[in-house]
Length: 240
Ligand SMILES: [Mg+2]
Image 1 (cartoon, protein in one colour):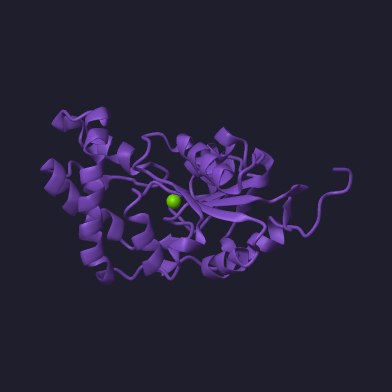
Image 2 (image 1 turned 180 degrees about the vertical axis):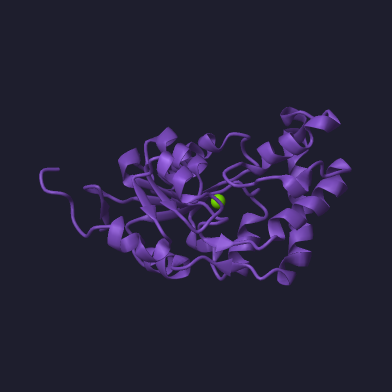
């Protein structure tokens, strides 16, 4: 059993882009193709900063000038998810998608520990997340639960969805102190706080050190190679 801050770790939720892997432009280009097909344009996609947002929120921002609101975009989300998966699937081999340092080793080691669950919380829609994971060498089946950017415009909703799914899978409640959220942006730290989980931030993504420090994660790591050294301990803290 692994522990963190004196509590047994039951669930670790990973962000994808900038945390587990580098998408190398595949996300932006598949978004462009899908937005053109479904919504007839991509707005100011080239200048858009994706980090920490959900794709539903991103679409709402980019399509605001087209008169489409978040509710209407949500109504068309199933179509968008189908179309973007088709485009990403067709182009993904053209992008040098790569795992972030230490990510594959860490996830493999955690998967072998069957007392905890792994999950995904990502701004990616539910159909593109497994494509990106597979392209970087991760088996999507390693992650027992997920919450996706197609499910809310607010990233802070996602850890609640993932936790609820993990509890249903386990058949018992999982206290928030036994949950770790790992991400690369201040928004990931905020969504860990929203659910009361331990927040781990890595500097392999698109946020600079100052902004991550300002978000005050429980742990700020250079990358996932030091996750075990800094975050996980083998036993409960004395007195707990
Ligand atoms: Mg990210």
